[in-house]
Amino acid sequence: MLGVNPTSMIRDKSYTKEELREALRLAISAELDAINLYKQMAKFIQDEKYKKMFLDVAKEEKTHLGEFLALLLSLDSQKKKLE
Image (cartoon, rainbow, N blue to C red; front, side, top):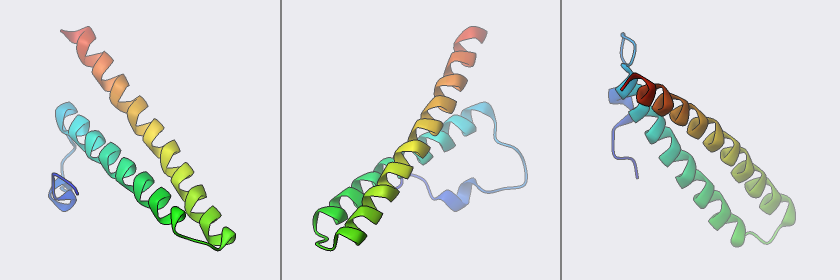
């Protein structure tokens, strides 16, 4: 599922801009996976209470996805200004 072991990204020093971009890409991928998983699971849940819970969580993940995308776009636009 993930192309990078997330624990290998944890360390004592700050990320470089490029490492931050990679961390955001990883987070975006994880959010997309989570959205798809929760929506797929909801399809097979008959109890409306539980189905709604999974769909609500998928919606929250979409919010996270949007936040990560906005940050990545911001970093990319900063990079282009410097070039």
